[in-house]
Image (spheres, rainbow, N blue to C red):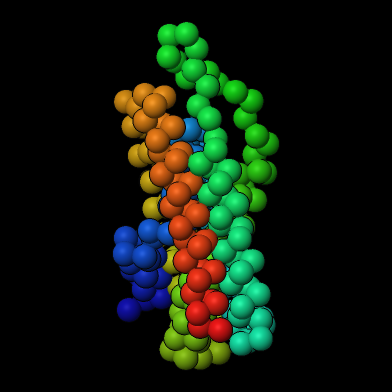
Length: 209
């Protein structure tokens, strides 16, 4: 099978069966509250973080993260980042006028969304473990051939990005059916979800350590 096809299949598998993580909560919440463009920028940040992790796996920097003596610190920092994002998301208020219509407030700088997507995704240890496994498997499969590896990972990452953009677009389209009260509820659910992921990571590394 051609590496491009294999990459697309892996990307779809990742998006459908393993895409229910902190980034998904952020993508949906941001697209609904801030619009498709903001969700798009967040998805770009997630894409860039995946690209960085894959590159680090190839260069062997993943060993720094997975060393037992660094595992606890990395897990605590990652969990703390997710909890902070969760608290900020939960606390975000929806402003309405006297007719209960949403008031548009100043939009953060575009780079803010890219950085949020980048750090939100790269702080998830499961992302590192997943890409490390894929890099090892594909390197063993293709050996020292660079071209098929580039095809494979390009197809995988772009497929994941494409599915993330579809999630953003779908979330943005349903915004017109949502009341400010429902949007506030979505913020709180997303915030709680992110915080739970963070707490889970912290308890996991402490227990394993």
